[in-house]
Length: 507
Image 1 (cartoon, rainbow, N blue to C red):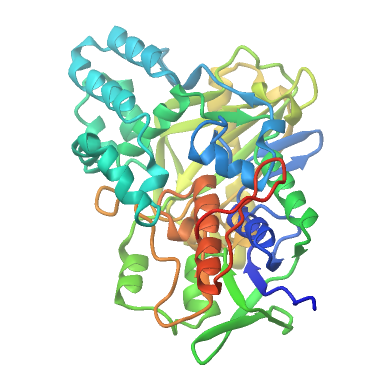
Image 2 (image 1 turned 180 degrees about the vertical axis):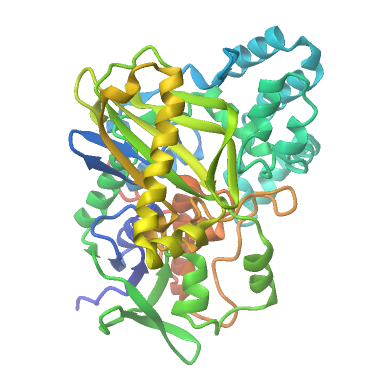
């Protein structure tokens, strides 16, 4: 007799939902992903305007190397080795409008040498930062999120490094950067909407880049999302697009399915929310399964900002320009009534030939803001002013770029502006946040509970249960969720391998 597979319904088809779907199918469940947008991916996406493609997510892909735990786990959900990776020499170049500049190299040795050359007065802090990168390069961050006994084994193995880890996780980037005398070096740490993040995040970032484990994949986020979605479908999973979820259905404190936006009931044995955390807890579940800890966290924990993005298609070859440029302004740019920026960040995508025709370049400018309500209210209540404000921002950004690349204005073939209202419309992210909760010294990088108090057969995955966000949070929380489900159902956890062969893993 053939038994009907147990069903898992997954709310949201971003990176976490897709990974959860792949793992569910590999473990013998029948998974259905319900995604509100017309394409999967969530914020891990790009879009086309004319001949140009504009990326909004991916700076690097942690796990590009087959070495290490994340490299192995990514290869469980799609064939990473089919991607072509770019290993940038420069992480960022910071420039002022009066001609000064600082190169931030991706490799720690080159970075340290350049910092010491331009800022010998900051030698002590420079050497401390570079030393931390080298000493913590092999620290298994993923193991710190694992269950016992794996976490205990990792902690014992790396016990000598725990004081160093504690030091760098207990100070923010802004606090650390404030001690630098060199202006541009100080700005590197402090001129950011995420400067309240623990400086440990930067330590790990440069460690991964030094190890060639954080390359940029040609094609950007879609080069990752599309093959995971294909793998999910090839394993027999079902994805329904343009299907928002209104409510998570519960009977006797057990999740039994969902109700879609058009009133359809979708029953399931397990419900996984890969959707926005705030909407899941307070809207889809009506706030019925929360406690004081959850309420406090959502009220007080700092978020990654939302953002505007000005995207430009340039009929110019910018191959000799830095790929990631931070331009320090002589006069701050007013983004909205609560936001002024002293630095604008440009990504000049000459390194990705898939984004523009030969001899042309896609360029994006990122403008962070926490004033999401201003943009949402304008979009909803005053569309004329909303469009006027978008034009104002675009013109200001072009003016900054014109001072850096004279004559660039006449080379602009495509101009596109997205706002926090755009982010909320397409992803539903609470407050338009780009990556959920910010890992500050007060909260650290420890993941939140994936369950909710008093609710059975329900789990959450993604950036709202893993401070720090990013693509790895989707993979790791999805994997942990399916391991938990398999453990509860007394079934083997079979994550598989990059070649498609199933293999058992202790649940």
